[in-house]
Image: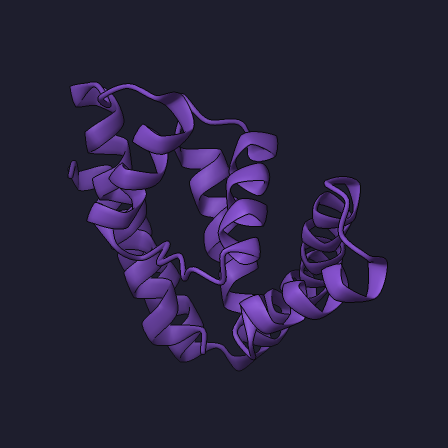
Length: 146
Protein backbone atom coordinates (compact mmCIF):
# COMPACT_ATOMS: atom_id res chain seq x y z
CA UNK A 1 0.00 0.00 0.00
CA UNK A 2 1.50 3.33 -0.97
CA UNK A 3 1.72 6.40 1.23
CA UNK A 4 -1.01 8.23 -0.65
CA UNK A 5 -3.53 5.47 0.10
CA UNK A 6 -2.52 5.33 3.76
CA UNK A 7 -2.90 9.09 4.02
CA UNK A 8 -6.31 8.92 2.33
CA UNK A 9 -7.49 6.24 4.79
CA UNK A 10 -6.19 8.14 7.81
CA UNK A 11 -7.79 11.40 6.68
CA UNK A 12 -11.18 9.77 6.22
CA UNK A 13 -10.93 8.03 9.58
CA UNK A 14 -9.91 11.20 11.39
CA UNK A 15 -12.57 13.31 9.71
CA UNK A 16 -15.28 10.79 10.61
CA UNK A 17 -14.07 10.57 14.18
CA UNK A 18 -13.84 14.32 14.68
CA UNK A 19 -16.80 15.57 12.73
CA UNK A 20 -20.22 14.04 13.41
CA UNK A 21 -21.71 16.19 10.65
CA UNK A 22 -19.51 14.43 8.08
CA UNK A 23 -20.65 11.09 9.42
CA UNK A 24 -24.28 12.21 9.19
CA UNK A 25 -23.79 13.40 5.61
CA UNK A 26 -22.07 10.13 4.74
CA UNK A 27 -24.99 8.25 6.30
CA UNK A 28 -27.55 10.22 4.28
CA UNK A 29 -25.69 9.64 1.03
CA UNK A 30 -25.31 5.92 1.69
CA UNK A 31 -29.00 5.65 2.66
CA UNK A 32 -29.94 6.89 -0.81
CA UNK A 33 -27.56 4.36 -2.39
CA UNK A 34 -28.82 1.66 -0.02
CA UNK A 35 -32.36 1.88 -1.28
CA UNK A 36 -31.21 1.48 -4.84
CA UNK A 37 -28.78 -1.33 -3.95
CA UNK A 38 -31.45 -3.42 -2.25
CA UNK A 39 -33.88 -2.71 -5.07
CA UNK A 40 -31.26 -3.55 -7.70
CA UNK A 41 -30.49 -6.92 -6.11
CA UNK A 42 -34.21 -7.68 -5.83
CA UNK A 43 -34.71 -6.64 -9.48
CA UNK A 44 -31.82 -8.88 -10.61
CA UNK A 45 -33.35 -11.82 -8.77
CA UNK A 46 -36.80 -11.04 -10.19
CA UNK A 47 -35.39 -10.91 -13.72
CA UNK A 48 -33.93 -14.38 -13.15
CA UNK A 49 -37.43 -15.74 -12.62
CA UNK A 50 -38.06 -15.37 -8.89
CA UNK A 51 -41.37 -14.15 -7.59
CA UNK A 52 -41.20 -10.40 -6.87
CA UNK A 53 -42.00 -10.78 -3.17
CA UNK A 54 -39.48 -13.60 -2.78
CA UNK A 55 -36.80 -11.52 -4.53
CA UNK A 56 -37.42 -8.59 -2.19
CA UNK A 57 -37.38 -10.85 0.88
CA UNK A 58 -34.12 -12.51 -0.18
CA UNK A 59 -32.53 -9.13 -0.87
CA UNK A 60 -33.61 -7.77 2.50
CA UNK A 61 -32.41 -10.87 4.37
CA UNK A 62 -29.08 -10.81 2.54
CA UNK A 63 -28.15 -7.38 3.84
CA UNK A 64 -29.67 -7.80 7.30
CA UNK A 65 -29.09 -4.47 9.06
CA UNK A 66 -25.76 -3.68 7.39
CA UNK A 67 -26.98 -2.54 4.00
CA UNK A 68 -25.69 1.00 4.43
CA UNK A 69 -22.14 -0.09 5.17
CA UNK A 70 -22.28 -2.73 2.44
CA UNK A 71 -23.36 -0.12 -0.09
CA UNK A 72 -20.49 2.16 0.87
CA UNK A 73 -17.93 -0.66 0.65
CA UNK A 74 -19.40 -1.76 -2.67
CA UNK A 75 -18.84 1.73 -4.11
CA UNK A 76 -15.25 1.58 -2.87
CA UNK A 77 -14.80 -1.77 -4.66
CA UNK A 78 -16.41 -0.58 -7.88
CA UNK A 79 -14.28 2.58 -7.94
CA UNK A 80 -11.05 0.95 -6.79
CA UNK A 81 -10.91 -2.21 -8.87
CA UNK A 82 -10.14 -1.59 -12.52
CA UNK A 83 -11.06 -5.05 -13.83
CA UNK A 84 -14.63 -5.18 -12.47
CA UNK A 85 -17.63 -3.15 -13.46
CA UNK A 86 -20.33 -2.30 -10.97
CA UNK A 87 -22.81 -4.37 -12.99
CA UNK A 88 -20.58 -7.46 -12.77
CA UNK A 89 -20.29 -7.02 -9.03
CA UNK A 90 -24.06 -6.60 -8.63
CA UNK A 91 -24.71 -9.75 -10.69
CA UNK A 92 -22.30 -11.70 -8.48
CA UNK A 93 -23.90 -10.33 -5.31
CA UNK A 94 -27.32 -11.30 -6.65
CA UNK A 95 -26.11 -14.86 -7.19
CA UNK A 96 -24.66 -14.98 -3.69
CA UNK A 97 -27.89 -13.60 -2.21
CA UNK A 98 -29.85 -16.33 -3.99
CA UNK A 99 -27.53 -18.95 -2.46
CA UNK A 100 -27.81 -17.20 0.93
CA UNK A 101 -24.01 -16.94 0.97
CA UNK A 102 -22.30 -14.07 2.76
CA UNK A 103 -19.89 -11.68 1.09
CA UNK A 104 -17.22 -9.87 3.06
CA UNK A 105 -16.08 -6.77 1.22
CA UNK A 106 -13.54 -6.01 3.96
CA UNK A 107 -11.69 -9.30 3.50
CA UNK A 108 -8.81 -9.51 1.04
CA UNK A 109 -9.29 -13.23 0.43
CA UNK A 110 -13.02 -12.75 -0.20
CA UNK A 111 -12.34 -9.97 -2.69
CA UNK A 112 -9.73 -12.08 -4.51
CA UNK A 113 -12.16 -15.00 -4.64
CA UNK A 114 -14.91 -12.73 -5.97
CA UNK A 115 -12.73 -11.34 -8.76
CA UNK A 116 -11.56 -14.79 -9.76
CA UNK A 117 -15.13 -16.15 -9.83
CA UNK A 118 -16.41 -13.22 -11.88
CA UNK A 119 -13.52 -13.17 -14.36
CA UNK A 120 -12.82 -16.94 -14.38
CA UNK A 121 -9.10 -16.29 -14.24
CA UNK A 122 -6.35 -15.60 -11.75
CA UNK A 123 -6.02 -11.93 -10.79
CA UNK A 124 -2.96 -10.00 -11.92
CA UNK A 125 -0.47 -8.46 -9.49
CA UNK A 126 -1.94 -5.01 -10.11
CA UNK A 127 -5.44 -6.26 -9.37
CA UNK A 128 -4.23 -7.99 -6.20
CA UNK A 129 -2.68 -4.72 -5.02
CA UNK A 130 -5.93 -2.88 -5.76
CA UNK A 131 -7.88 -5.50 -3.81
CA UNK A 132 -5.50 -5.26 -0.87
CA UNK A 133 -5.99 -1.50 -0.81
CA UNK A 134 -9.78 -1.86 -1.06
CA UNK A 135 -9.88 -4.44 1.75
CA UNK A 136 -7.85 -2.14 4.00
CA UNK A 137 -10.10 0.84 3.31
CA UNK A 138 -13.25 -1.22 3.78
CA UNK A 139 -11.93 -2.54 7.09
CA UNK A 140 -11.41 1.02 8.28
CA UNK A 141 -14.87 2.01 7.06
CA UNK A 142 -16.47 -0.94 8.86
CA UNK A 143 -14.81 0.07 12.11
CA UNK A 144 -15.77 3.74 12.00
CA UNK A 145 -18.98 4.00 9.98
CA UNK A 146 -21.13 1.47 11.84
